[in-house]
Length: 300
Image (cartoon, rainbow, N blue to C red; front, side, top):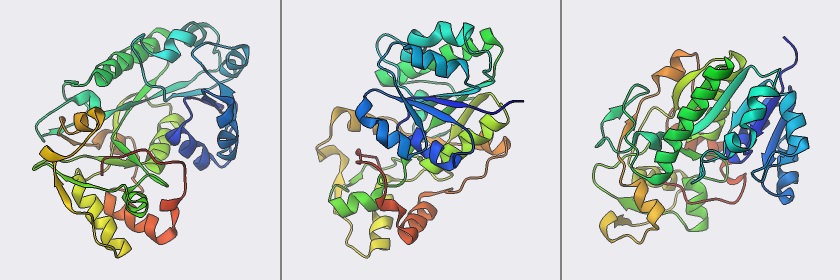
């Protein structure tokens, strides 16, 4: 087998975490919408390319030499942007391709009333974005069958890591403790996304995998634990009913489930951050909680 060459469509927070763990061992190409973000990709060890919804010659050349394709681009009203732009190239002009990884979301399961779900559970998506995700997953699995290549669907829970976590939110004053009785969320550290991707890619494993921590927990508990590590008072609890929330933030609380992760463990993966306590303690101890990019609001 020749040299592995990775190509990441949508090299955002998770894609850059994957490239950083690569340690320049293998070439990694990655796309972003604007050239202004090229330098950030280079600093993460990614050779940057622009993808604005159409397939340029540079993209085509990069794909032609790719052995392992990672897709981290959300679907939209028109379908999956990568398949729409590059579907034909994936079928006809990727002679070296061995494996495809698609980053999805546990949102595809919808609301299960706090019950446990695994990869065999029914997808009952509530939000429009999750309905589109289910369709995109099916399209990628179908493509894999057509070209005879394994496709791994990684269903991710709430992503956190350097610069995106409860410690950082407490420091900048954005942390809140919303309380909705019985509500829990799973989480996943970006380094565990990177580790799971690497394991699946290196073994060319396909299938559906929940990439999520071991402990679904109430979001207010995560903030309180972070405050304890920092030695500061946690923000006051806010009843969910009276909280001022964006429609998207409120929609997250309309889904309640506990997500199991046995499939990725059965594939051989061992989590670096099996729960939020381990992760917060380690990030607090080594200072990595402050690194990274501008934060977006995260649940928990």
